[in-house]
Length: 377
Image (cartoon, rainbow, N blue to C red; front, top):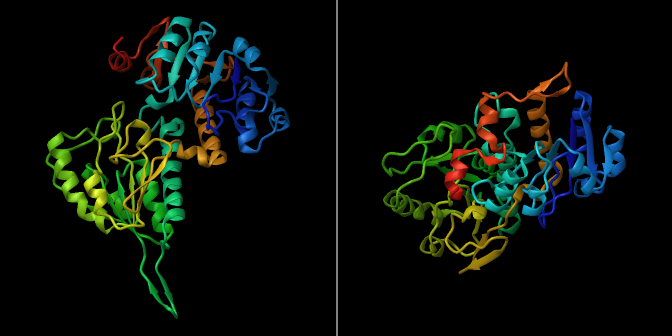
C-alpha cells in the first residue's frame, strides 16, 4: 500500500496530515510512505526528519499518480480531485456538505473519498475522531486569544495593593471545544459559566469547576452522535433573552454552538453585544459555518462599541505542532484499525459502521445519502 501526503494548498493552513512519527508507524505496518518535499516546514520537520523515519520524498505529481492512499487536512481543488487515480482512497476534512465541486470531481474520477468529519462519535472510533481532536485544540486556543486581548487578567490576585477580582468567562456550547475552553479558562483562574441546550452535559461542566447556566427553552436534546439538535426560532429567542444578562456580566464570551451539516445558529445578537462592557472580548468558534455572533466577520477582528469580536478561522492551525500530531495520529489509528497484518494491507470491511458513515464517494458516484441531499444530487 502506497501512502502519499501532499502539501496543503489552502492559504494559511499550517497543519499536516503525516508527521515523521506517524510516517514511521505506517512504515512499520508495511506501508510505503511518501511525502511532498517541504511538507513539514510549518511544524519544524525537515525532509531529512521524514526520511529518517522511513518515508521517501517525492514531487506532488509523482506522489498523486502513484498513491493508493492520499492523506490530507483540507479538501483538494476540484482539478486535483478530478485527477485522482481510480480506486485510490482520499481521506481528510473534505467539507462534504458544502464542497460540491470537489465531491462531484471525486465521484467522476472513481476515487473513494473518506471524510473524517463523518466519523461516528462511538467508543470504538474515538481514537480516529479527528473532529474532536481538533475541536479540543480550538477550545484551548480560543481562551488564549481572549486572554491576550482582554485588558485585565484572568485569575484573582490578592496583593498588598489590593485584591483583583477574577475575570468572568461565559462559554456557550459544552461540546468538545466548549469543555476544553472551560477547562483552560479555569486553569488560568477565571470564574467560568457555561450554557448548553443539552441538560445531559451539566455534570461535565460542573466537574470542571464551572457553573452551569440553566435556561428553560422547552424540549431539547442531542442527536445519536452527541450533537445538539437545532432549536426552533422561538426557542432561540427565549435563549437569547436569558443569555443577555450573562453576557452583560462577562468579560469574555466564547461561542462554540454548531449544528452538524447546517449553518450555525445565531445566538449573540447586536443588542446583546451592546449590553456588554467596553473591553470585553467575544470569540466565535462557529464563524466558518456562519457564526453564532451577529456581525462576526470571517478571519477578522472587529470592534463594536468597545467590544472586540474575533472571527478567526482554523484555530487549531495556530498550534500546528500539536494539531498535526493529533490529526496524524487519528489517521494512523484509522489505518491501523483496518489493517490486515498478514497481508500487510488495508482491509475494506463492507458492513463496517465507521467506513459506511464516512464514505462519501465510491464506484463512480456519491454514495452518502445525507451528502447527496445537502448538495442536491
